[in-house]
Length: 475
Image (cartoon, rainbow, N blue to C red; front, side, top):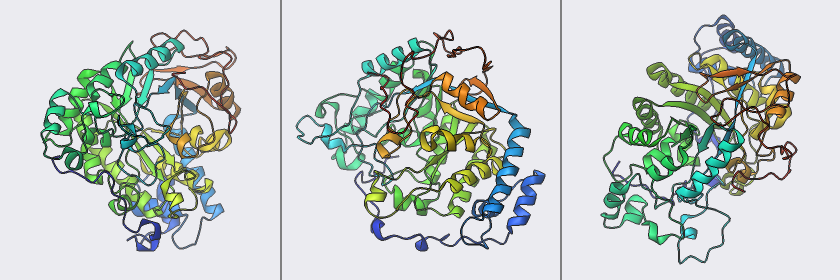
């Protein structure tokens, strides 16, 4: 991990790049849609070509065929019912993102703020933040008092963040650490974020489950060294990390990554980081951020990478499809994309994930990305999980998301029972579950170390309607 990447690198000519420059510009296979669907219905393991046909509703046709699409959705919903039943799960959680400071230059992201703006001598105005470990701990303590039991933390790659004190010394010893390993010492910044171990220890309090350190963050926590991912994740686990998010995946095909995130780790490194986390004893999740410049063939290839990884490891707890929110992102501003995915595409991604990922039990639908009505539709396309209470969500909101930042237990019970399904509170790893009686309200979490069934935030707006103001967890 001694090689450095230019933190400000962007894709050359990205604004003019069209999908016709990809190897999979016009996806076609030797398979047929009808044969792929028959295999899906029979429970035969699908190939990547099968997944491509189902995602496209046939590469022999232009666009999505509505009749074929419904046949795919029906097959996926039946598979969901057979494999996991009619329960819809969710968690009581909060997001605590440590910093927005980042120089990676991903074109799909509007979460970041240039790290230079955070320096002591900077006069750049920005709306970003960096939290000290003490501030992160206070956020988690407040959440525990509300009944949460999971903390998700995904942050920018702050140049002053290092794994530990030894890592600071290694990085500072480079001749030009800023350009060679994207490092500047904490004293250069108005707020010292501490080390990764400091932040993990601060957030791992009161019996909470800490879900943090993406593969990209693990790379950052080992940059400039020859440390293995397993070593890094083992130190993080010793400090209190409980599981790792499989984000930073975007599309796990390098020709797509060259366009949307040329400064991020490659597909092989993402896989290596996930294997390192699992070798350190951690469960992980898996994701796909789709609907930008990729084709359906890229999506199928991505699912193939995830299924192969699960075949080898068996520690992926869920698949989380992330519909690209385009409005405030560089990809949109630079004219590379003019929209995100259609709702038909959202439904097919969830459905094909259910049919293709035969070794991953749970598929998530997102009310943050899709809103209530469409999110509930996705639960009838193969999904069985409906995210969590969140309390504070920054990444989608900054990209232009419109569906709020908070979901109460009463909201969940009302929404899930409205489609005839059983609401179930779950732990992060799905191993602990509590079926909720819809008639026994008001509803609140009971699985948290300080949870007693009391509604989390009495009188607080759910943020259900687009544009509704909601309160951050640390307000």
